[in-house]
Length: 477
View 1 (cartoon, rainbow, N blue to C red):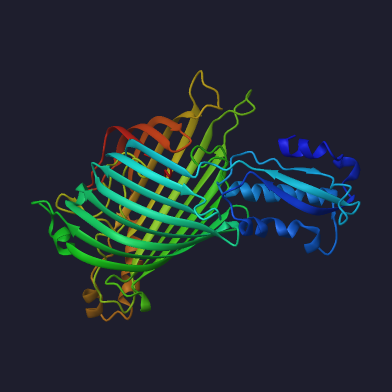
View 2 (cartoon, rainbow, N blue to C red):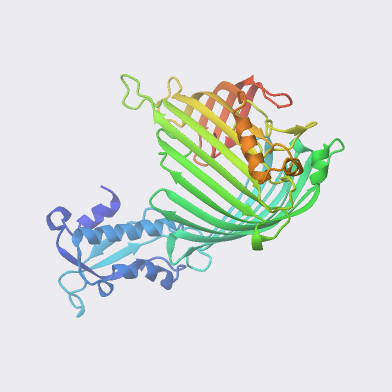
C-alpha cells in the first residue's frame, strides 16, 4: 500500500464502499506559490462535480485523484511523492451534499534554478560543461535550458532550448531551440561549424509509444581542413544550408533502457530535406530503423538468474530526392558506423567508404549484434554490473554508380536503381565483424562498457581496434 492509498483509507474503507456515490466538491492545492492557477485548473476542473453529469463511485473518484497526482508528477516541477488526501466538507457549507468530498494536494515545488558544471570522459572525447535549467519559468511547467561545453573534439558548443507543455498536458510538449557549435572530426580531416535552430512537437500515443515531429534549419560549414585532407573532403568543404522536417517514433517495452532484463524496443526516424518549400541546398530523404530484443535466460536453482540474451539491429538509407540537382550526398549528412556504442571492435567511424586516410561516410548501412550478459561471481542480479560476451558486425556503403552513368544507360529512374543496387550489395559477403568480452555498468545517467575486442572480418581500409575499448552512452547496439 502506498502513501496515497493509506491516507485515503483513513477516511473511507474502499473495499466496503467502492460503489458509494461520490462527488468532488472542491480541490485545494497547497504550497505551489510559483504555479499559475489557470494551469492547475485545466488539470483539476474535470474532477469537480459541477463539471460532471453524474457522481463518481468512490473507487472512480480515487482513481481520478490518483491520475491527477501522476500527471502533476510528470511535469518535473514538484518533488515526489505527491500524496493527496481527502476530507468531508465543513458541515456549515451550505453548498455541500452528503456525497461530497474535498481533496487536498500538498505540494513541494522543486528548486526553480539548477546550475551544473562538470567534466565528461568517453567515446574518444573529454569535455568540460556548464548548464543552467530554469524550471516553471512562467508558472506553467515551462523550462529554459542553457548549455555550454568545451572538449577535445567538440571545441565549443552553445545550446539553448525552451520547453512547454500544451493544454496542461505533460504528454504534449513544444520545444524551441538553437545551437552554435564547432566540432573537430579527425576521422575526416576537418572541422564542422554549425549554427541552427529547431521546433519540435512531442506526444504520447498509448503507454509506450512516443512521437516527435520537428523542423530543423541549419547552416553548416566544413572548414579547418588538414594538410592531408582527401579530395572528397575538399570537394564538400565550405558552406551548406539544410532545411528539413522529421518524424521520430519510439516504442519501448524494456524494463530498463540502460540494462534491460526483458522487453523489446523499436525506433524509426524519417527526415526530408530541401523538398518543395523547404529550400536549402541539400535535398534528400533519410530514414533509420533500430530495434532491440532482450530475453531472460533461466538458470536452475535461481528465480532471477540475471542472465540475459540481447539482440540488436540498426539500418539506414540516405536517398537523393528525384528531381534534385543530381549531386551526391554531402559529408555532413552521411551515416557513420563503428565505435564503442555501435559496432564494437572498430574505431569511431572505422567502417565504410574511405578516401585515403579519411572516413567519408556512406548512404546505406546495416548493423547487428548479439550479447550475452551475466552477473559477476559474488554479485547478485540486482547489481547494475554485468559481464558480457558479444559478437557484432555491419556494413556501410555509398550509393553505387553516379547519376550521369545511369542516365547514359537509359534507366528511367536512376536514383531508385542506384538504391536497389546498393542494398543488394549489403548482402554480398560477410559483414565486418568483431567479437569480445567485457564489463557493463549501468549508472542512472548512462551506460559504461569496457570491452576487449577481436576483429574477425575486416575489409580493406577499415579501421579496427584489437584490445581494450571504452564506451559511454545511453544507446548501445
